[in-house]
Length: 72
Image (cartoon, rainbow, N blue to C red; front, side, top):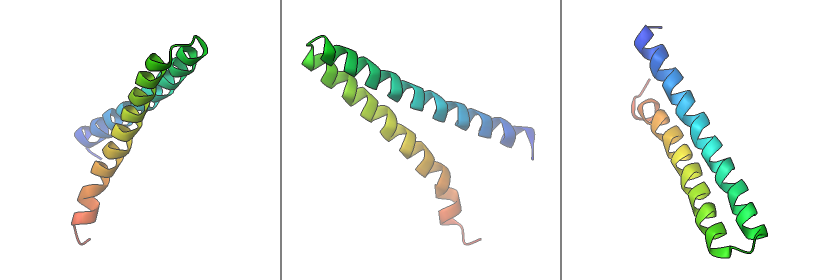
């Protein structure tokens, strides 16, 4: 495996981990805001968590694209 491919894989894994962390953190903040009676802020944090998890799944789908397009 070339260094470029290895580095690219490491960067993709790091991005995946970061998006997962952001999603988890946003959900925790949403719960804290809800507990404090801040429903609007809780909603915003939930939307941020959804955005991070959606970006995470889109990132994974993009990684699969070259394998789906080629015949081999």
